[in-house]
Length: 97
Image (cartoon, rainbow, N blue to C red):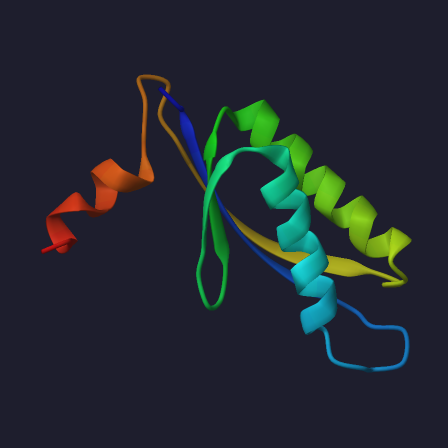
């Protein structure tokens, strides 16, 4: 069972003040290609896995955005870590019909 939930919102600076959504899409592609369980939400994406694995995905996201032309990136990150296990499904099951 996974021991970490990590929610991330990337805020990439764009080279010419253009729309940042294509850069955000690139960051989400990195998450999708990583194979970690994730859920895309309107203001952030939550990933589920092992702490080191998720932090590595964050690093790859930042590198991909810089490689795509963003001069800098700010990320807001929330981490829930429980060595005995944690899951998105378990935390939200009581809210589903």
